[in-house]
Image (tube, rainbow, N blue to C red; front, side, top):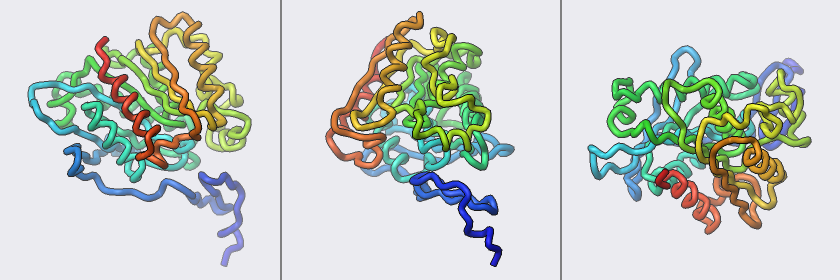
Length: 303
């Protein structure tokens, strides 16, 4: 047997292990479940391919429809997992989105971007932007996906993500503000325990984001961004957790955003006694249920 087969060259528990022969072993987030109609909430789900060329795909969620003429907000959701594990098809993300969609009464596109290290960053950013453009292409009700044509109010669009997905969500809102997005506007973004980098994450980031200039690079940590005032939404909700090592940068982001000249409203919520993405690992606890309720309330506010 080739001695290279099992020789580990990079080990980043609990995320990935990379072997000398190039093989990538994902240590978490590999389990998937099929799309279903939830018997309790009536939320439907289905999987679609956005790009045959890149393989970018998504899981769509449709809440129980009680009035076929009433259009619903659109949530574009970006999963976390250190840019290299997890997917919209994992039980944790499927169940989280199912609960959120039922409470918020929104249509959701949960994006499956190409993951590092096989596809180094910023590929995940580019994939997410392409998926957003695909979703927005339904704004005249003539796109390829009936759920978006028939049920979405494209005047009410939200972005949300957790951990690495929250980092991508911020970058997408920035790009909307700087470059525009097919004439539509994003009302708000929800960043749950954003992965804005720290010293502990630097070695992994060096590997999966080779063009990064350090953990203060604006694509990972936007606090030093001179374009922050152009963030392309009017509301921001940030969640941090008391025991999360990424908490301080979440707080700093909010403080800098408030002072940047951005003409919007930012709110931050710190959950006591909890760690990073606790709501995915313990979704039935009282604090996780409160977090989902706050996310739903944010999307249901009248502007």
